[in-house]
Length: 303
Length: 250
Image 1 (cartoon, helix red, strand yellow):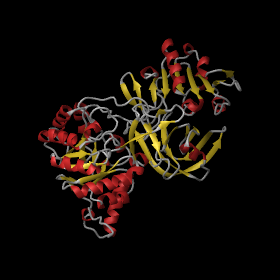
Image 2 (cartoon, chains in turn yellow, brown):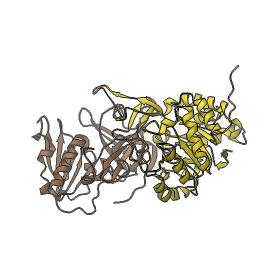
Image 3 (cartoon, one colour):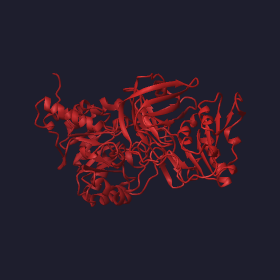
Image 4 (cartoon, chains in turn cyan, purple):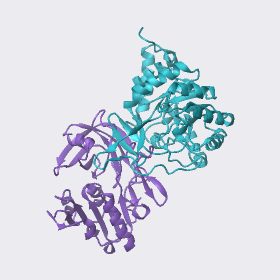
């Protein structure tokens, strides 16, 4: 009922662990069979190892949280040697999330991942709000995004999904630009650039001043963006943003998402994605749907 | 020490909630999930807000219960403090790497600052009482110290306001030369001082770090600390670290 095809890759269901919230899958394997998920997006990878940002990295907000991890990761060579072989044993689709400082970085990184056996989809991260160079720098303006997608497209033999930033000047135009530049899918949204101030010191909570806001508080905005983007492009859209229940997931799917990613909700409850999967199964059974894909993009205006 | 695999459990019954001082509580819940000294649980006693669970170290454990000693610091711990007998919590744990006690020998000092005393009772119960000195520092009124005396341990109290024990800081009462090993938990500046004194004396020191956490299981990397081997995850690589490995003033 829940089988979903994303860029030619068969997923058991449309529920995917979002990048940066699930490591490389090993940690949560202690709590449940992560092979029951539709897929896992790796922690954001870069060509070279990164130590990430100094200082406090997490701050709670009403119905959400801010993070400033800053793409801490072991680098792609270590990922390929140490993490990917383990990930491949998990029994689910593997989506390698990749970021970079500049075009050359992105190209070399994608090249390495593209030739790796066991990576099903490459998710191009042009939307990390927590690094100075690269990251979101490519995710604000359409032509910058198009240039990086066009640059990696020729070296990417795998399906290429571009992860968009809600901080883009115009997210619909951004998605169109990525589609034209050769993206096979887009995923949205990454976290919102946000600010918290310590009123006692009159300084920002985070060393990097701003940080990425995620969680239930962003869901309505993310949903609106997914809906707008899905209407404007012909490639699949993967919905992300504060999804914590099967009903949330269904909203994104009705708004046009082929699949969804779940992030911070896993912190709240390690097994939440399994509940989302079983909730969607129950929904299909109750509604007598042969496939959940039949409700995709079925959201219509009232008048 | 058993290697315990962590679990996520909901509806765990509260057996008791004791208020020890104005803002320090001991919560005991019915669970067989156990925990080793220095390990912790992500604890949640609410539906929606705040978003994240709170990391609390195992204060005491037996076959059928786990106790947490905690101080009210914000919204999450405020809600925990409202729990009464018969209430329920959701737990993820036991998590992290605790104190390494396999190779301990000779005299041991347990040095704590404030609520840093929380994980130490669990540890103390595994140690030979005659070998242990507890140096517990508090801002003001001490709490949770009698249980160490009951174990037959040498307990010294320091208070910053002098209301009990010796006036001053617990670090002033520590001469690491007298011990084979020092175990510490408390505010970062205090542990940094303990680590420094131990390093100077060439005495091994294990420190249990505190950090804001999101996942608690090693996946999200928000609780990292700086070590000589690069960033490590307080939740999964720690919370107990070799103090010599931690870069205290990063």
